[in-house]
Image (cartoon, rainbow over all chains, first blue to last red; front, side, top):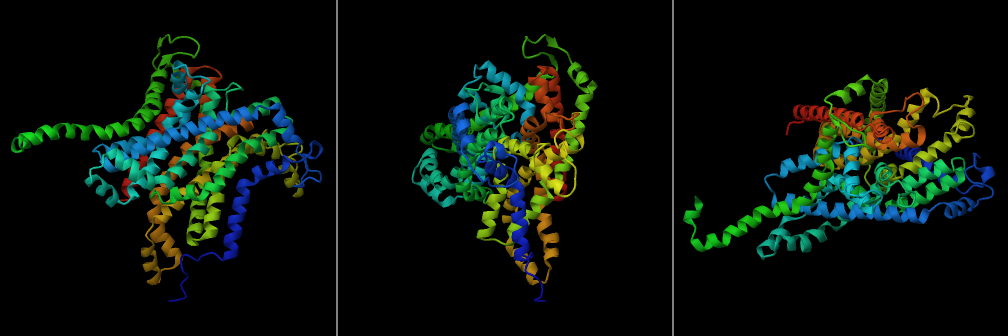
Length: 277
Length: 307
C-alpha cells in the first residue's frame, strides 16, 4: 500500500531536530558553561545568569601573567604535530604496501594492527615508561612523541580503506609505463589520498593534543609538559580560582575546537567513507 | 623447477628483481611493524615478565618470585573493589556505547542532508574536547556549595547534593562525564556502518510493502549486529582509557573507592606506590580479560555473521 511510510522519513522534523539539539546541548554544556563563566568577574562567578552584567577579561589577564601558557601550548603543539606526522608516514607506507603489494601476510598483519588498537594503554604504561627512561627520553620531546607512534593502528586501518578505494586503473597504468612502486605512491596514490590524509592527521593531532596519561608519566615538569598536565597543575596550585582555571581551560581547548569545526566534515567523512562495518 | 625452462639471461635479470619484489613490502611495512612491535607488543610481553619479578622502580630486580605478585594482588580488598567497580562502570556505560549512539546514527541516516552533516559534526565534538578542561568544567558545576547543579536540583526542592563526595552519586557522575565521549565516538562508527548498507535492498523492501519497523528489524539490524558487538567490546577499552582523566581530576578514585577502577589502580600501584610487580600483575589481569573478550567476540561474530 502506498500508505506505508518511507523508511527514511520516520520522525517528524520537529521531533527530529529537537531530539538532536537536546543531545548536542547535553553533550557540550559543561564546556559552554566554562566558556561563559571565564568572562565573569570574581564576585559573580557562581551566578546562574549565563552572561555577567560586567563581562571582564581579568581571568585571562591573570592566567597569561601567572601560568606559562605559551610554553605549554608550544610543547603540546610539538608533541601533537610530531605524533601526527610520524603516524601518517607510518600509516601511508603501511597501507600502500598492504593494498598494492598484497603480501601473503596481509591478513595476519591487519589482525596484529587491530589487536594493538584493542589493548588498553594503561596495561602497558609500566614497561613503556621503563623503556622511555632507559632511552634517556624522560622530559624530552622524543619521549613524548616516539612511544605514541605505537598507537598508529586507527590511522593505518582508516588509510587502508581509503587506499583500497582509489581506482586501480591509474596505478596499474603507471606501473606498465615503468614507474617504480615509490613513484606510484608519490605521484598517484598520495595526491588521491590527500583528503583522507588531512582528516586522519587532524584526528591524530587532536587526540594527541588531548592526551593526558602519557605526558603525565614521562614529562611532568611544569616547563616541558603539555597543556593538559599544566591545567591539572594549575588546579592543584590555584584550586579556588575558578575564574582563572576556567579561563585556562578555555585557552587550552578553544584552539582545538576551532580546528575541529573547520575540519569536521573531512574527519567525519573519513570514517563514513572508510567502509567500517 | 621452472628455472630450467627459462633462458639463462632472463634468470640473471629476474632473480634480483624477484628478491627485491619480495623484500619491498617489508620495507614499506617495517615502520608500522616496528612501531606496534616495540611500543605495544614488546611492552605487553614485558608486563608479563615484570608480573613475576620482585622489582620496584627504584632498585634493581631482585629475582623471580613466581605468583607472589598475583597472590598479593588477589589478597588486597582494594583490587577486588576496583575490579567490581570497573565492571559496574562498564555495565552502566553499555547503553551509551550501543543503543543510544545507534539510535542517533539511525536518526541521522534517515534524513541525509546538510542538517544531518552539521548535527553529526556537533555530536562528535565530545571526542575532540580536551578531557581535562571538560572534567574541570564539571567539577565547577558540581561544586557542592555554590555549583550550578545544586542550584538546578534546588528548583525541584531537592536538598544540595555532594555530587563527587557522596558514594551514591560519584560513580554516576563519572559515568555521565565519560558517556558523552563514548556516545559521540560510537555514533560516528555506527554512521560509518550504516553508510555502507545497500540502500537498494531497503528500497526494494519498501516497494514490497515492508514497514519501517520491519526494515529496521529485518534488514538494518542484522547487518549491524557485528558492529554492535565490536563497539560494545571496543568501548570497554576506550571507556577505560577515557575515564582515567575524569577520575584523576574529579575523584582520585574516592569516595570510599567507588570510582576506583582497574585502570586507575594500575597507575596508582605503579606510579604512586612504586609496586611495579603488583601493578604489572594487575595489568596482566586486564590483558587476560581482554584476550578472553576478544576471543569470545570472534566466536560470536563467526556464528552470527556468516561471511
